[in-house]
Image (spheres, rainbow, N blue to C red):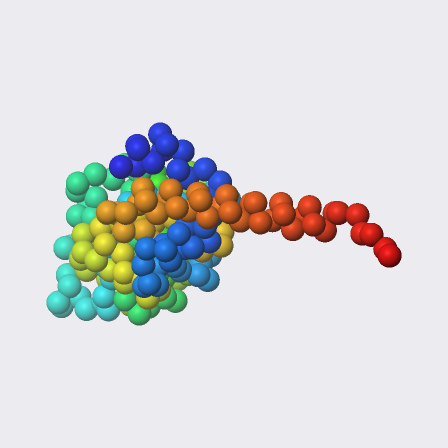
Amino acid sequence: MSEEITRRGLLEKLTTANIVDAMGKFHRHRCHLVDLVSPTPDRVLFGPAATVAYVPTCQDVLPSERYNFRRLYEDATHDGALGHVLVLASNGHPDVSLAGGTKLSLLASHGLAGVLADGRLRDFAELSTCGFAVYCRGESVKWGGGVVTPFEAGRPVVVGGVMIRPGDYVFADSSGAVVIPHEQVLEVLDEAHRVAEVDVAATDGIHRADGAPQHVT
């Protein structure tokens, strides 16, 4: 699917707003996320989701030898990592760090498109040069493992009030993010291009009208 999207040039010149408008023609549910922060704001994030959900830390119930970032990351990407978006769901802890530069270096080595985190991330300076796109709730300087623990992977998650299933497509830019059902990604992106073309035509019309000579009688 991603190869078809690239081949057809369906991502060219699109914005989150274009895709949100297109999604509104197919669905009535919320599909967008706002108030995201990024150390890579000039990079567009796009790809199918690989999901990891966090829960409150409890060492007795969730021993770290099983419930740790590396293990859950491997569970999330066992069917393939290349071009995917790692989605980290904090489950109600948006101000806690979910990962940092060291852990997220796995994404570069495995060719992921980037990460969307419903929580904070550490090491923005390092992440700004990581080679993939990063969008989250903000930067943290404190390790979050004492508060939350990676719990399960490969399941639907809720991020900012939006459900994301494994395989659903995530698009993010400096204005926000949008989630597209994987069954309709080609249709939605086609419609988003039509939306963008209508917007451009409307803007051109306004500019022509503003620039037209004014006749005084």
